Image (cartoon, rainbow, N blue to C red; front, side, top):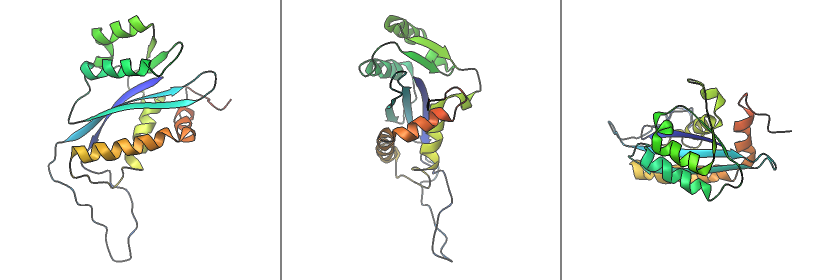
Length: 178
């Protein structure tokens, strides 16, 4: 299981779009908006059945802290069976005492990714897909609107096991099509 965090800003990721000839598309957005949506996601791949899973939590205008991370991990335990190998980056919150104590209590095996190696994390590919495809050119009115739309798109991704598996396949760590 890989876990990673990201932030979604109100300013849209601008991508190419189509418009009638001579009519330049215009994206209306709020200027100088400092609101954001923080999101945590866990991407799983079962070793026996090769099934993928996507679990997430998002909050408007909050940062990812241990007070959010531990309840997210606790919620994951209700969905995961058997031995768990957790792989994540070296964020200080991941190495906080309260987090490590919780993981030791659950007997989860933890591996840390090398520093500056986002290409090894399939969740980073999930973030890139989310920001550059369904959320591209989307200019929300506020953080609550962005959270609502992002939730809908991540829920759609849950129903795309082929796409989720492609995130694993794109990393040099996995060959999930055996």
